[in-house]
Every structure is written in structure tokens, then in C-alpha cells.
Length: 129
Image (cartoon, rainbow, N blue to C red; front, side, top):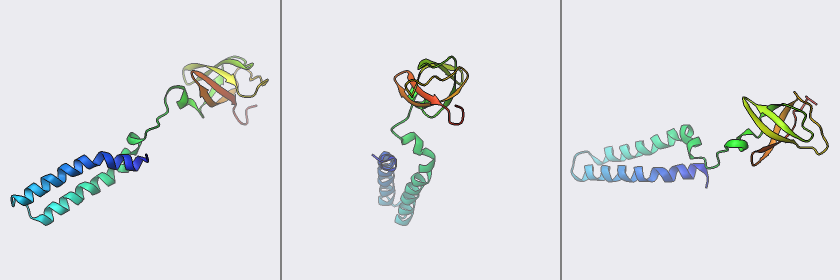
């Protein structure tokens, strides 16, 4: 489901409460009908205006753990021939070189191509071979 549609579905209960409240106030002659209509449309416009700020909270696929490291760069902590360890920020990760037979020397900058469980598949960063 698209993020905008998910956001709008979550706003419907608030709009329903606003509409019932506005209709009740009009019914008991507390406010004129034009104020109720203006207030309801203000409520809807407020929700639409906040969408760009809240969009990320409604997105369904949030990468975490090893998935979040795809595309990041790290440093080989030993030779990757083809397995070894890399450091990304302060964390040490098990890694396998993407190209079979390729040996990535210790200290080489690597880029994470994909994650398979808790193991990262890496290649030497472009321009660093």
C-alpha cells in the first residue's frame, strides 16, 4: 500500500470525530454551518500539510540490523580471502568478498553490497583496488 494512502487511512477516524463534533455544534446552534465546514476543511488541510513531515513514520519497509549497512563503507580488519572481518563505525562484522577468488587486503576500504543474515557481502570500494 502506498505511504500516502496508509497515512490518509490513519487520518479518517480523526476526520470522523471532527465531522460529528461539527455537526453536533451546528445542530445545537452553537456555531453556524459555514464555521463547521471551514473547521472541517481546516482539519483535513492540516493533516495534508503535515504529511511531508510524517511520511517516514508511515513507511513500511524500514531497514535495520545488517540490512541497514548495505551501501555503507568499512575497513577490512584482516585479509578477506574470501572471508574475514570488517569494521564499520565501531562495530566488527563478518564479511565475505563478493568476487570469488578476490583477496581484499587488510586496511582496504570496502563497500557492503548485500547482507545474508549477520554476514556482509562486500567488495573493494571503487577507486580503492
